[in-house]
Structures are given as C-alpha cells and as structure tokens.
Length: 327
Image 1 (cartoon, rainbow, N blue to C red):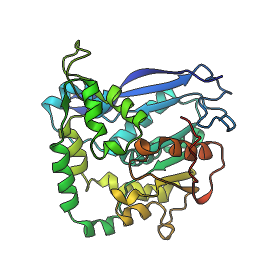
Image 2 (cartoon, rainbow, N blue to C red):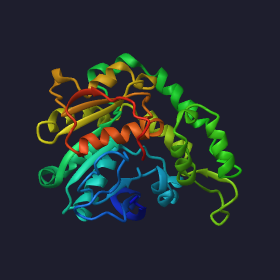
Image 3 (cartoon, rainbow, N blue to C red):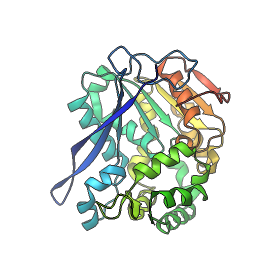
Image 4 (cartoon, rainbow, N blue to C red):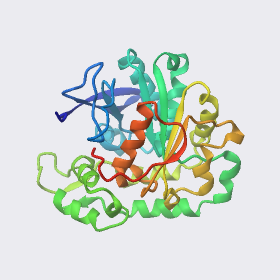
C-alpha cells in the first residue's frame, strides 16, 4: 500500500534579533499514514525493502528564505542583514533541543545548508552525543581559508549581479512554470521538483488573489546578499567542523558527478581532505547531477540517502543509474 504524505508547519522564534525583535524560522514536518516509531516514512524504490524507523522529516527555512521570509517580511523590509549559516544552525539546534530531544536525528543539508547542519551539530554541544546519529552533507561548498584567496571576487560579483537582475514576478503560476521550464538553470530540473518550486516557492502578489500575479518568497535582494557574504567566518569554520566532528559523529558526503558546474575543484575536494583530518564515513557520487542535485536528480539523491539511512553507505562509490526509482 502506498503512503500518503502529510505536512504541517511550526513558526519558531529564534534568538537572532533585529532591533530587539526576534527573527522567526518556519519549520515544516512531513509524515505519512504509516509514520510510527517502528514504521517507514517512504520508499524511494518500489522494489527495495522499506526504510524502517523514520518517524518524521523536518525542514527549516533560512530566515530570509521560503516561508521564513514571509514570516519575517516586515523586519526584512525595514532592515538589511546578511543571514549567516551559523545563526541558522544555532536556531535549528534550539528547535531540536526544545521539540526533538527524544528523537534520534540524522541532519541533512545541501549547499549552504551543509554548513548550517555542521553549525547545528556544533551548537548542540554535549547533547549531540545523546540524539544526533549522523550528518549528511549534500554538495557542500566549503573553502579552506588558506586557499580562498586564489579565486578572487570576480566570479562571485558576476553571480550577485546576475541574481539581482533575475525576474521575480509573473502573471500567474502557470506562466511562471513555463518561463522557468525554458531557461537555465531551471530547465535542467526534474519537472516534479520545478512544479513543487512554483507551487511553494512563489506567493500571490496580493494575498487573496490566488490565481493572479505571483512573486518569489525569497527576494532577489536577500538571495544576492547570501552570495555576497563569501568571506563570512562561518564558511571557513564549516570544513574545520568536519575535522572536529568526524570522529564523534559519522559524516556522509553526497555529490553530483558534474558538480564542477558551480563548484571549483578545491572546494569540491575540501570536505574529504584527509590530510586535514577529515575522515568521512562515506562519499557517494550521483550520476547526471551537478551542484543542483536536489533539483536535477531527486531519485538519485534519494537512493544515496537510502544507503546512508540503512547503514549501507561506506567508502567512495559512484551510483549506477536506476530509471526504476520513484520518489
């Protein structure tokens, strides 16, 4: 019997304040009609043994992203700040201590989220030994401090200008979907993921006009600010946290075979550099995926995550393509 997925949200006031007012973080929980302490949440493969023991999945929107951006809209509109991944990780740790203390946790983060989950683990302190079981870093972008200077600011400046100039408003969700589908990078995405992005990443320009103009929940201003903060201390701390945490908590790395589309080679290798004491429990390469592995190959990523969750991931492997997999 197939599972029906349910979701509900919680709005969490974080310790990060602006002018004395707390920023909010929206957390969304996913469960199914089979979600019990000893049952599966989903089965990415129809012919694969079901994953056991997943109670629920939580996702956390960064302060200026997704539904958190909507919840913080007033504060964001009147102030300008660069949300750090360290602050995001600390907020998730506060949430976990207050809401998930009885759970066994697997922390998964993609791109900047990979930095956030390392800061989350670090913020847990001694508590991580009691309920953090493993960390999964999906396409992390980390730099060693001593290597960063060689890249210069030109690529980052170009990306900031490009993002700031991107379109952010459409006549309706259908026209938005068609626009994304015909342009890079969105046309490389799995269409199911693109549909989710349009349905949940855009909001009505006028709150009650559900079929009228839509805009991105994440403003281009804050999206570009995130890329502009490349020299933030937390980005250099992230790979050092891999060194500090890898002997205490199993750390798994998942990357796309074609990840040089956005990730320089030194950054791609940074997280698994054993000469710097970074010994990961497994390193999985997913075919036909670049840095946007979540959007491009959700099925391949799901297979890689299944291997981690079932305790089957070890060493360095490249997955074989499997067209039968289903999310």
